Image (cartoon, rainbow, N blue to C red; front, top):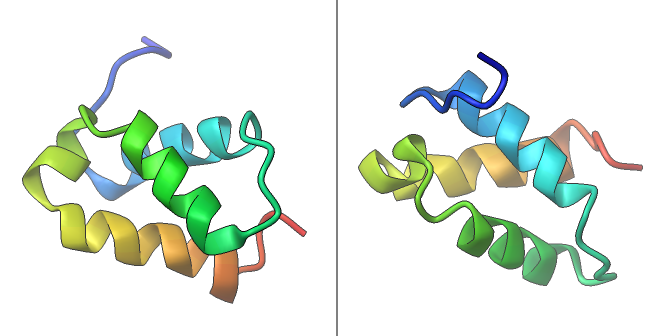
Length: 67
């Protein structure tokens, strides 16, 4: 069940966080782009790429989750 991907923000956030930790890049915006590219087949990105980017930016810049 862990590897199941769902078309919702929670599933996307879990996948995003996992991939974020595997990318070595100092430029946060470039790193977001790289993660989104890796997750390009995630159902949430496929159905709503604009909101997926907003969620990614919110997690990185507003929540400061990865500091």
